[in-house]
Structures are given as C-alpha cells and as structure tokens.
Image (cartoon, rainbow, N blue to C red; front, side, top):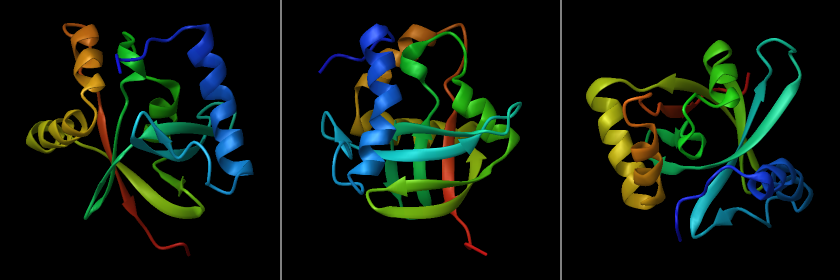
Amino acid sequence: MPAARRNAFTEVFFRIHPWIYRKSGGRLLTRIDGNPILLLNTRGRRSGLPRTNGLVYVEREDGWLVAASWAGEPKDPIWYLNLMTCPDITIQIKDRVIPVRARNLEGKDRDLGWKEIVAQDPSFAAYEERTRGVREIPVVLLEARDAA
C-alpha cells in the first residue's frame, strides 16, 4: 500500500479511529495495512486536556517504538510535542492499558529504531523522503513503568 498523505479522509479517519478502538475493547482497528496500532494517551501541553492518537508501533524487548512522522509533513505532530512536555503517559494495546515513559531516541539508537520501523512498514521511507532537508523524523521509545 502506498504511503498515506494527510487529507480530509485521513483526518476524519484518525479522529474516529481511537473511539472505535476503545469502544470495541481493542478488538477493532488494532491493525492497519497489516501493522499493529496502539493508542497513545497524552495531555495537551497547553490545555491539559486528554488527547488520544492511534499510531503504528514496533514491539521490542525494551518497549514500543513509534515514529513522529505525521505522514511526512514538514513539522512535528502535536502528539509528539505533548509527549515531550509530559513523557509519563499510558498506551493501549488491544484491551491492555500500560503506563509508559517516553524517551526520544538520538544518534545510533534513533537510527537503529528507524530501521526497525521502516523494515516493518516501508511506507515510513516515503515519509522520510518527504521530510528530507526539513526535519529528521523523531523516533520515540515507550518504556513500561510501574502503575503506582
């Protein structure tokens, strides 16, 4: 499948996706184009209101990788800015809600994580091409933390 682009359809889909995912108890829309999807639950850095985004992820032994690609847009997605302001959040994978701490990967760690993401979903290579010379797409590791 070709790499997605932001348009009216994708904007509507990604607004209703988390609602369907949650209402189904994590049974629907947990995979898109064969890729696993998690719900990232953040708080608005200015408003403090809860925000939820569905993201493709790569599961690793040390957590879950996500990329702030925003379909290759020239600026970072708002969820990423919220996450960097408050990195202690929760994610939902299917019916499990997991407390995590987000860590922005840099240097060799970022490059390795990026390769894992592209290996799982080659669409991300197109997003990287769209951002070339504008920004480097951030790669974030979501590490499990104690619920307490």
